[in-house]
Length: 165
Length: 165
DNA sequence: TCAAGATTGATGCAGGTGCATCGAGTGGGG
DNA sequence: CCCCACTCGATGCACCTGCATCAATCTTGA
Image (cartoon, rainbow over all chains, first blue to last red; front, side):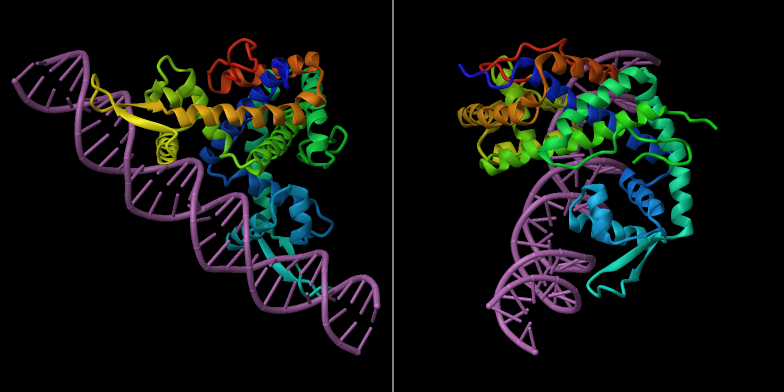
């Protein structure tokens, strides 16, 4: 009789899986209904817009977003196709390149934040007091910071002008 | 200055997304490395094995698993292809059918639970006290039970003979 | 200096997912 | 009884993902 994971742990696991997939679904649906592209585009545009001169190496973007290399490569393709970013050659390392956000990209990112933040409020903010949100973050951090080893910023300086990291 | 979602809520949202994707990834990887199929197969086999006579209507399975209809249909295809389940006609409603788990299916489900439970312990159980796991479950439930309207069972009666719902 | 190995980014292929739609079958109201 | 609306499950299509691998370039160390 090993009983490896406690019933409590198992229950938390199940809820983690189900709740995030439901909530993510809801948010993505809201964005889509508002005529916006998927969240991944927002994340990429945000990272680019944050970067010193609006440009990043694909490798950097990849590390920020925690997605595989080929996935980054194709996401950039799509952004470029839509005129939201452009590829620029990298003089110092001819293997590499820079990806630079365009004005259209910056603008889309800002417009998306409107719908995105509304969705976060609707599906998360309105369900939890700030104190509970902090508790939840703390518990989640305990899970996150070790199966991989990425660090999220301590507790985030987020407001309407500098959206989420 | 609207500041719709508090920074606390936004931070919780980000962590929810990132942590679950990391943890899920880890668990799926462990299963794959142990030579098992994806978690979705396990979930389906579990639901089938729980059902009164080891069979369910696809529609039921769909509702249990919270996945779209076409997805269920194709998942069943794969299970049947691998001999883990079989389709049986439904006499009372000729549109429908029953899906019945096979012996091979039941056996695979049990073997997978070994690897699966070990992964849950590794990535969740070992990171959280039971009390914290309960807190986490409670907070997650507050998010889950309203963007859709499914109810997870109150807190789960899970042990080594009756794996997670 | 040069070969071996590591890093960057792209891509062919197989498979999975979402969307729309279809055909078969049911069932309820006129 | 029949027609219309609905439910059940399957499927064609486009797209997206993971995996393996590639070519180009950089770096290292003998």
